[in-house]
Amino acid sequence: MPQEKYHIIRDRKYDLTPGYWNSISQTSARTKDFYGRSLSKIWALYKDGFGLTLWPKREYEEAGEYISDNLFKDKYYQRIAQEIIKEQGKIEVFLTQPIPELSRLSFDELVKYAGDIMSYWLGYDEVNVFAWCVGGDFFSQKVQEKLRLPDDVFSLLSTPDEKTEAGKLELAELKAARDVLAKKTSIQNAANDLAEQFSCLPFGYDGPEYWDASHFTSRLLEISEGGTENINAQIIAIEEADRKRAKEKDRALKKHKISAPDKILIDRINTLAVWTDVRKKLQFPLHYRYGLILRELKQRYNVPFRNLRFLLVDELNELEGNKKAAEEKMLWRLGHGFMVEYQRERCDILSEERKQSILDELAGQTTAKEITGTVASRGPQLIYTGIAKVVRHPNEGTKVLEGDFIITSMTSPDYVAIMQRAAGFITDEGGVTCHAAIVGREMGKPVIIGTGNATKVLKDGDRVEVDTEKGVVKKI
Image (cartoon, rainbow, N blue to C red; front, side, top):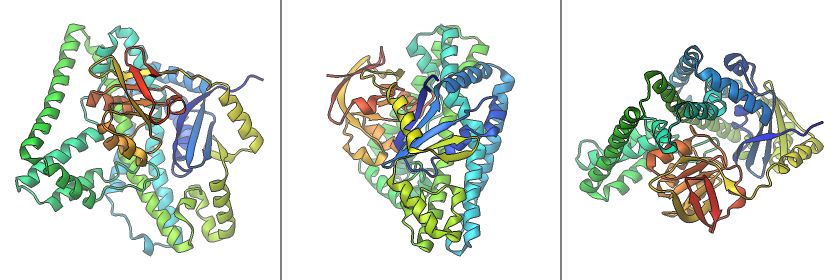
């Protein structure tokens, strides 16, 4: 029997819940009905605070080919876009509702609220993720082959005009600080407005970082120290860079005689990238609310908060029905490296023998020491040198200094402050529509994505050469 080949989709710091919702979504019947494809199985190893998620490589590639071919078809694409807007609206309505006073809810009401959060999350995820995460790279490659554009031109055209949440935050903070200095608003009101828009940006799956008004008060005081003239200069520079990029895109479209139908294809690549960012904007607040429920359960049942992250949502009832068994289950999962097989919305913990068999198969296909990936953003030159800093979680970001290269599994909006300091980003995961790719283009920094092994080969302090023509990273 031939060995299974695996596509590593995620290898980063996070616990079982709510991270496992991804695998439920990607193997669900609804995803298959909606896209025409899903994954029959997904495997995830949870060990020492990290999650390693594996997709069956053949199924992933077959689904990528199928979905990317269909993204050329107006009806298929428009159906996805319409359903995403519909599900997005449901979450937005839910998030406008005040968080209930959890201490006043009954146990059954708390568990129902947790289930509602997961339901909204899955409702959106099942229509969103496969378009960009499975079909996106295949589609982008096919469009590039069709248009035969130089890499730098295609990279420019496939950068969305809409700013990422990281880009929006940077500009919003500067403008708020300017308004405070001009006495157009109070620092309290400005901080509250920023918190309302961006509070969950650093939360990710597990938090605990959350930017409340006090965080933004500190940020506004820090920015204001530079004075109005300096702040205005930064705002002008950002807006001028945006205008320059827009003009360059217009010139490229004319120079290369991009037809109206082909421009639609480029716009679709841009939209796929935007969908990745919007997903995080919608789902991080859901993760935050779920975390609040766990904190309430911690208080009621005297169970450590982290332990509760090792119960599935439908296992929360065990805290009331059989607390001793639930505690034993949480402790075992927390203390053991265990692997889950997800299949059509089921979660089964595999035997030690089966887990080791999968890990042995994976080890046989991940022995490469050369670091190569896809160039997502070149920046202003082709060759760079700098110091590598391996960042497995945003809370490790303090070690990243100006001019360092972030080496990570993947980035997300909670990495934004670190990304602003870094010279560039090298990731294990991701495609041309991923967060690191888009933010890198937005910031004009070099980015190489999808290396598969950068975090395993490189270590803190390694001096690296980054070749953004060949997509190669070397220790020097």
